[in-house]
Length: 446
Image (cartoon, rainbow, N blue to C red; front, side, top):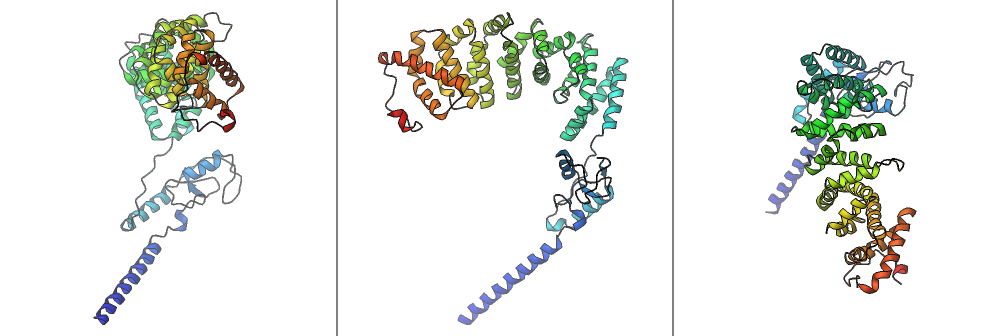
């Protein structure tokens, strides 16, 4: 019995040894040939390209090398006479063949990479699009814009190449040429161009002027009010980027009939978080005019009349942090006008939500929340507002914020609020015995 057990044990050792030997053989069999490895990453090349020095690298690695400011060949250290990257099709096919041969060892065949678009190709398609637009050949324009759109879907590199080579300014001019005519007749090409515009910024000054023309802005309003969700989303994304370029585009859009209502409509009927954030950013641009502009209060009052305060509070109930932060930023500016503060105080959710959002979103979100509470309590100076703030735990939250540390401007507002609260502490026992003070330092509790 002992002998048979010993034989079985010896047999298992031999099997294990054999498995280890086979494993070593597999490792040797799937060793990647040196000339298939990128000299930079030392990984198997998926898209080999050759530089002017004759050395071959993986495209992603050499692009990263050049983008970081290097102008020499990593291997030879020679100065690159050009940054052109020529696809090495012969080597790529050899790598693909090697992958197929070693498929049984778990090696997957690398896909044939798409050749990135070149500046020359971008220049050529710009000329063709512009020519088709001059002839008012909508069908040809639609075909060419579709090709641009397809290039952009292939890679971020293509988007960057097209943006850097003026495709945005070209499309802006084409958009204006069709928008100045009957929008109903050219809605298809306008929608197609609109789907590309969000990722072709920044624009040249000429492109900005074209896209900021009254005809284009009226088209954006029409799309914002329309039934096509994708067009509504792209329109508000383009407007956000356009508003960030110059205040004159903000003023021009605000002067268009229905523009303010259209922006609020995107917030009232949300499409996606990205569109909501863009719409909130547009509102912030529109209501954050310089103090010298006399119509700033009128614009804010108009947004309040459209029910924006209630919409912002609804957003704060369940929206993601980035959206909530922008909603607080808009609400903070709206509370600069009397109508905004009155509307905020009418809503029973206002004070509880503002206190709750302190230290829960971001540092900027906390600053917005504190600033709004200060405006509601200090400017309105109503005792009921102060008591409500105390009831929902504002005192405890503000003490914690002071301990965490904030900028001087917010610190002054918190100090002012604490003084106001202190005057009304005797009228209300606002400190709940169950409140957790673990975040406060000992010195503050003494």
